[in-house]
Image 1 (cartoon, rainbow, N blue to C red):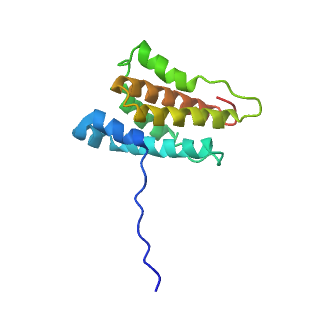
Image 2 (cartoon, one colour):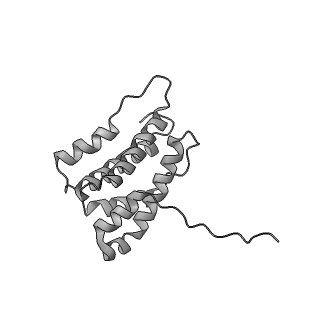
Image 3 (cartoon, rainbow, N blue to C red):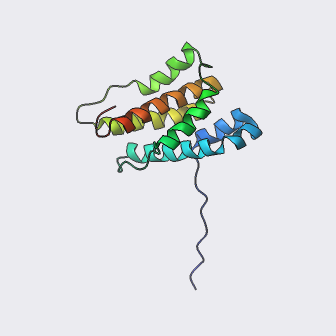
Length: 147
């Protein structure tokens, strides 16, 4: 007799757990729609970084507005050190023959994983999310063109 299929819980990106801790229980609950949006975006970027087709980056006007509302509460909380750390992950040369979109996705996913793993300051994470939103907006506004 075949075994019944178990439902597998969706794996969340480690950055989501870090953000939830920084936000605290109440604010994390109120930010759940944004955190779900971010998790979906990171999953789509990870797939692209691994050479799979570009999935849904969730850059609709409604999704972008949701992200802007979340980020508005944290805008400007970071300093030059936070910016330098994040830009160290994101400002990379693209090798000849590399797909610029896939290279961008690699930089973003590596930054997200590294920042989660190093337990970066909340201000560093806010700046990373700000940059992520900027890059995703550029991708959405310029389809088919390198970032």
